[in-house]
Image (cartoon, rainbow, N blue to C red; front, side, top):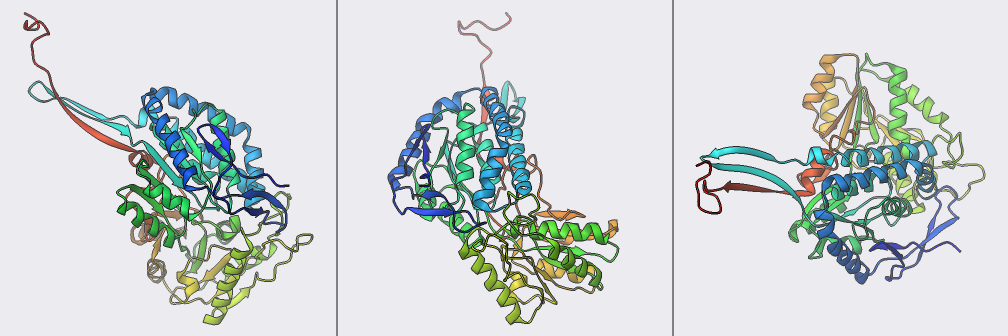
Length: 494
């Protein structure tokens, strides 16, 4: 019998009480039940919030250096147990082991960043801003904050959020994805073992109803969300209506522009890694390849490499790409492949009939490539979130930039070139938040902030890095004047 997933509330693992028991399946075989998922009830959310409210005063008042020492200890535990976290992720998400290990590493980097909070959350001070008047600004935590995460990065995205939040002195409630909840809960449990006090970091499992309750709960001050654009916009609007601070990251349609002077082998390898890494289930995946002035050589090379990718269970050493997350998502990706065919694009590599020996029920979609895609096609405009690459051929760099800027998204786009002038033009004119120059996945490191433009983000601030500190704190400005007389009325110095 598979175990039931439990909530972490006030330092205790407890059963959710909302019902709706459903099995979580291993996507590689489609049959193994990893755990039983139970929805949290409104009462469960209330208990988690109450525990976070109760824990907040002591955690807020703990010196920041002591909070960060706890984070340093948690970082050590996370590194020691990184293999366990990665294996859990492979089983419930379908990534390859190498992809999972890389994700854990990137998450731990945010913990490292947050552990430097004493030097990053400092305020400002001016002495004698007026005669015998000093002025200063300092930061204070918000209180109880929450985060709702998607399935595609079940370790890294929670760690985008809660390390920065709790380092700033907040208490945090994590709602992992209902499709991929085990890894986030495991990471939170390790943080608790590492010394994070009861109530400072909680886990409540559930779907959209739980997110909505966290948004509208009167004692939750802010919500951080990562997911699809339609849901991100709903979260943003709901949180704004509730008077909450919100950051909501949505979807993407990322373009890779390839100039004629680009190195073919390096570029093709980068396209493969960006497009088919994590089975294309990531907002930084390059889903449109735009070769400039020709492009047959790079397209042919990408197709050859895509054909060589070995599909399989991510825990098997030679696996190059794992399954997508669910049978439902497999059907969705395959429906987009049919849309591309119906729109008249040239299907040069079809992943719909992918077969993996020994795993007949796994949720596999093979690498797919469309050629001669036009800007008006849905496969050029809409996020597919799977291993599907569209090729749009451009006559010039100007045309390629126009193609990319025509999408409603603005997450991350890349250019491959040996020309500094072409790279500079692309950097200046492309409309997105993250740019790669000879890099296929332009995701910033933890000490910068992650987020796009246009309909890839809702709210003013991005996640982790300096924006994360801004999001999880508020500033107070103080104007301070003291008289020149002491407590006995005598004049100082006389």
